[in-house]
Length: 396
Image (cartoon, rainbow, N blue to C red; front, top):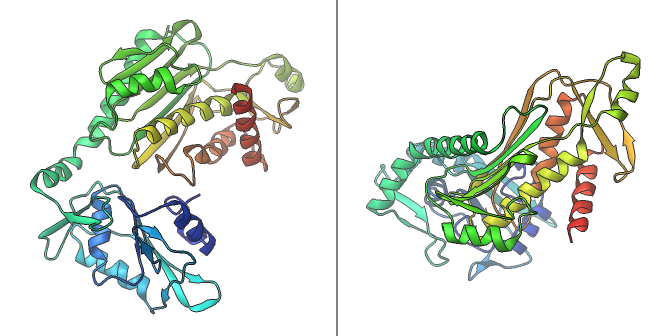
C-alpha cells in the first residue's frame, strides 16, 4: 500500500522512503523541508482539487525528493497544531490526517505526514473566507488562487457528482436489461469502477474507442460498439455486458456458472442438491476488470479517487468452492451456505498509483464476500495473488 491508501497508524519510515523514490511533486504530492508558515494553504488546496499527501521534513529539488531523508526537528504538539488550524482556519472545516514518523538514527528528527481527501464540501477558503486555493501541479507554484470559473465548478461539485454517478450507473443497468436476455437463472456478478466525483469527462470518446480496440480488454470488449459517451460490448448468449464511459466508468455484468457434481458429494450427508461457485473463477474475472480500469486510468493519467463496487446476486443457498494449490486441489473449507440472495463489497482507492495497483484492494473485498459463504481462509491473500499470476501467464 502507498501513503495515499495505507492506514496512517501502519505507516513506517520505509513506506515514506519508497513513496519518495516514486512520486515527484505534483497535483497530489508536496514536499517541504520545514513546517510552512501557513499549512492551511496546502491543506485547503488539496481538499479543493484531488486530495493529496504533504510530507514535511523532505527536501526536494525541482520537485524530486533528495535522498537520504533527514527529516525536520521534532516540535511538540505539531499534529494537534496542524489539525486545529485546519478545523478553525479553513471554511468549511477540513480534517486532515496527520502523523509524525521518527527518522531512524536521528531521534530528534521526524517526518510529518499530512493526508487530505478530495472534498465534496469544496470550495474551502482561508484568511477570513476570502482566498480559495487549488492545486496546479506546478513545482514553482503548487497552489494558486482559484478564478471565478473554478469557484463556480467547485460549488457545482457539491451537487452534480452524485447525480452524475447515479445517472451513469442507471444507464449501464438499463443497457444490461436491453441486451442481456431475461430472466437469468442463477448467480450474477456486477462490477463497477467509477471516479468518486465524476464531474467531467476524463478521456475523449475517440481515445476510449481506440483503447478498447488496441490496448486489450481480455476479450471483454473485443468488438466495441459506440454509444453516447462511450463504448459497449454485449454478449446475449453468454449473458455478459461490459462498457466504458468518458467519465471513467468501467462496468461489467455477467452470469456466473455453477458447479454441482463435486458439491453434491461434499454435501451428501445433508441429502439435498447444492450448487456452488468457484472461487478462482470469481478472482479471475474481478482481476481482469480491475486491470482494465487501471490501464484506462493510467492511459489518460487520471489521478483521482475511484470507487470499486462488487455485487453478487442470486446466491441464496449457494456454496463457494475454495481451491488452493493452483487449480488442482479442491478444498471445501466449510459446509455452510449463503443465506442472503445478494452480497456486495466496495472500496475507495487511488485510480493510478505506481506503488499500489487497484487490484491490491481485491483480497480485502473477497474476504468480505467469502465471509457470507462461511469461508474464513487464513491464506486468502496468497491464494488471490497466485490465481492472478496464473491467469496472467495463461493470457501471455
